[in-house]
Image (cartoon, rainbow, N blue to C red):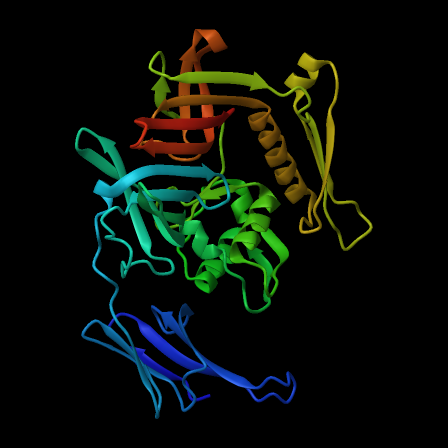
Length: 399
């Protein structure tokens, strides 16, 4: 009812009051939502004002302050607190990262002076920008958003612990309605998903699956956008991370990807192994509107010859509607088997240059590594100022 639009010179803001009269739901109520748009055509969520406004909502931004009001009430949204440097109080800083899920941080700060007991920036989704390095020089490595905070006090120490996740956290919220996509490519679906979730998603790599149309893809009410993106990534086998920044990075690992780093005697530890039962025959079955079967099969001939046996795996996905799509999926599944059957791990000095999906080289005579290439599939960062640990654990797979 009575929507209004404000334009600040670059962005449109729409204040819309959603009304339920209770005749069907028996729980009549209103609530106001603010959406933004760069062009007045495509809109995504910006701010929720709840049920406080009943008489036609409006929004104006002036002097850095956002005013939301109706004929009775006016609310203000003040600008955020100024940034604060937490570096001198860091006690420990562990970060865990892996494909297709948000990186997580548990940052422990000294609060012995009580400086954080009533900190104004301890608010939902406060932004934490992390830079790491050596010798007084550092580079930004992560942008994270506050999930939870906890103050702890003992006889000897007071601390503040911050739990945060990276940019993918912003996708981990449920859709409020059914979203239906018919005969669209993955980039087209991703473009709309980004608008619905109010995030930025990088352009996908130029590999064939991203030009294939998907006959039908749904995002159900209550399903998180992160879960939907995981399902979409499974269809043709691509990966995604935040890579420490403020956008979603998409990747499709290729065996020809070049190495970005090389390790040798400076490593603190290394391990290497290989799984015995990785599949070397993949059959993918899709769905067809005719009686003609839709399927494809691919094999790792070299592995069959080396092992002297076939290890078969069947994949059924009714989103795939042509044998060509099944062939793409089968090849992607086989590549995933080939990557993950080789596993390795390195413990090295903390290295701010590393990102998920990077390819690195390692040489260690004890593990039989001689300039071998591996892809980073997961990482654990640890900077602990109380013990002097400054380590980076890299979990690896074949490139």
